[in-house]
Length: 275
Image: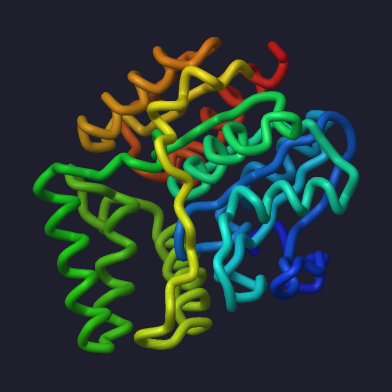
């Protein structure tokens, strides 16, 4: 079995807008793993046991609207959900490790709730205002939007999984089990939502303008096959915060944690040891 957990392993936290699911395992210094958009905590299947074995308590939530967590019925911010979970558990400060959307949640949380965060790792992310400008990503986003508008879930999923290989490769070049996992998670999250439902998400404003407020250690960790604008944005973020550093994993794209888990885990664990 590829995934580290089953649904029965998850716990739930009664937020002020429905139950939010999370995995809580291990003991020691706290690490919170924040997944990318449309997937769920299982994207961290190669990190959860490695971090726990290295002496960390690992919390891996399904963020609101994803996986086994409730959808929103009123305005919300994922950073506030993260903070509420940590306060519910009387846990923290935590090292936040975020992938893509999860990286934005991590930087938003450290800006809005700095008392709960001791370090940040962003992967495939910079700050909330970042937008991809490369032709490949923009074309893929347009294809996904057309598929969603047409109600063609299979076409949307076919496009979504192409983020794993990225612009320099095809799906034939990457691990089929990782592709299957991403497709399965995204299909499950998509099925939770209905066409035209209201988007209650409230963005945190001016995050890059406020990045210099981040005083905890911050690591940007990206696949070397990411588009250049993402790599440049990550470098800018690392150079703007008080204690930033940037690492690149060669030969992989948006999901280095899936494609080169041993390399990814070593970099993250080495960073955590410096705290």
